[in-house]
Length: 317
Image 1 (cartoon, helix red, strand yellow):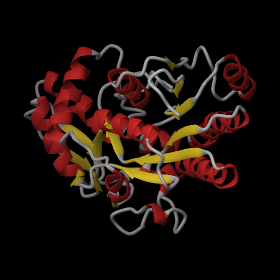
Image 2 (cartoon, rainbow, N blue to C red):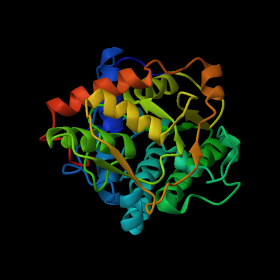
Image 3 (tube, one colour):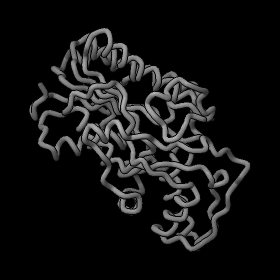
């Protein structure tokens, strides 16, 4: 039985998702939250993770820790995106099982689904086709985590649930142009171009792919919702159920930032998956749905970026 005093460990509590979950839990009255930075606890180190769990009386684990990045980072660093994510999640999942933790929330990504899966993406589409090549390393790791939680649920009857968010954005996002996702990269590019006399901005691809975006505070509320419920299935998509083209997104970000220059699309660069719209009907039927509309969320994210420019370029686990 989870109470407001239950000890909840948030792995990755300094990252975008983990910090949002921490804020959401605090505002909901939870008083016994714990987290360790990657410097304090290397989640890739199995022995260190086991020692940490043995030293704490943890009741709930929320796994928001991962090595993350966009197309460029996934293409350039396939091995660490596969191996480090496997190490992090396997250590957390296996140690949670072996120390008797009954409630585990595993966070993944919509990239686990096949590149050409039917739209909107249903949970049942998992493992029905080939993955998108530009992020398959990360996807394979996350699929392994989903199946591990499913196996524990099936074999041991523990309440291990996987949540697959769509593209997330918000406070504490990564704005480094080498490793960031599309929305924060756009915010930084348009902002810097505005400061540079509204210079032209070059963006990857054709602008035609369609993407769905969820404000990270809404994702945090979904995590807390899943933690507080006994959900009947092991895998749930989390998103808005609405998408727009990358070109439309660029125009929205450009308008919010106040950039007056032109946009050039570099069609020699990959587009990635043509469309990734999530079917969120299962979680919605259980009682959760998003609250923050895209323009409002982007305005809040840009304001956060302006206030934290000197510290927003780090990847935090």
